Image (cartoon, rainbow, N blue to C red; front, side, top):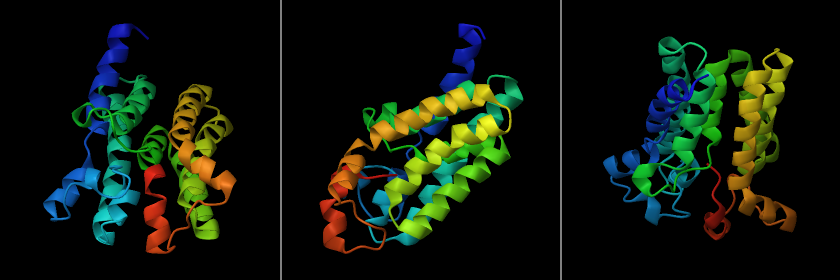
Length: 208
């Protein structure tokens, strides 16, 4: 793939991925500036701290959709360049230029690009994410495990090219969850549905 072709795929995917739906929706619904709430993260987990579950669910779905849409659009315009689009969308969500490169942790958007690359990868991601979240009620564990499952699923369906890209993105997700990992090791990572006091105390290491 030439540098020109890579940029044609990467740039629009990055711009689409960088749309801060959490920030936009919280402002439109009168919840204030999401960056001043909890961890300041723009993902669905922090939106949930506003107490607006519907807005958090909408943020999750839109962050997922923008990842899938980036891959689908680039595949339609530049067949074979969808791998670059996958990376661009996740990077856009995690490091949006509009917000001084302070975005989310990429879990929902990574599920979107996984689904966009191949439905089997997206299904594996969803099963691991939802299954572990239901079983353990620890959002960070579910998200990180799902990210790791994506490249393994890509290998299982015979797509090492997808696996390489998804492996790199999984490493990024783990890096962005380093505060969560530290709390897991210390036994202080909060569970979904935990007390408000615990959730506020955990805010600096937000997950979504």
